[in-house]
Amino acid sequence: MKIGLGADHRGVASIKQLSDKLRNEGHTVEIIGDVSGEPCDYPEPAFKVGNAVAQGKFDLGVLICGTGVGMCIAANKVRGVRAANVHDEITAQLSRSHNNANILCLSADLLGQRLIEKIVDTWIATPFSGGRHSRRIDKIQAIEQDKDPASIRD
Image (cartoon, rainbow, N blue to C red):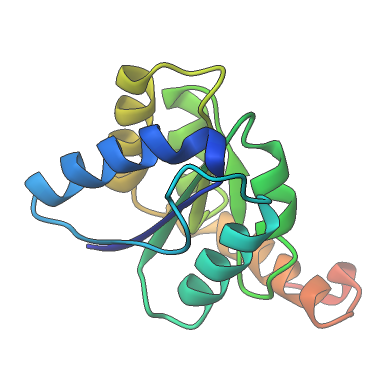
């Protein structure tokens, strides 16, 4: 799997460790943006990773900041991105199976590295369920096109 990673200064250590782990598991991984540890505003890596995922350069993306909230808000502004701020394995699974999330946003401050890695493993391993959930994804895409999601029917 091709995975784009990004972090602000609060997520640098976590994203570097995650990158090593995913590479060791055979994934193609690229850290996008500045991970020097210098102050970095979270919208910048969110935009870069979001665009790369939306354009198909990566299958999935993972973003880490202090809480995951800012990254999620910023990434979801990119058309074609369905970012989810996740704090446990259950919401990781549901964000993929029900919402077909293509970007995972995590908290460096609230989650330990071990939990971050378990969440990412669950998220990557979970396929989209399709079925009734596909209609809902179609409605999200309608919103991106300034259309009323109620206009989407089976």
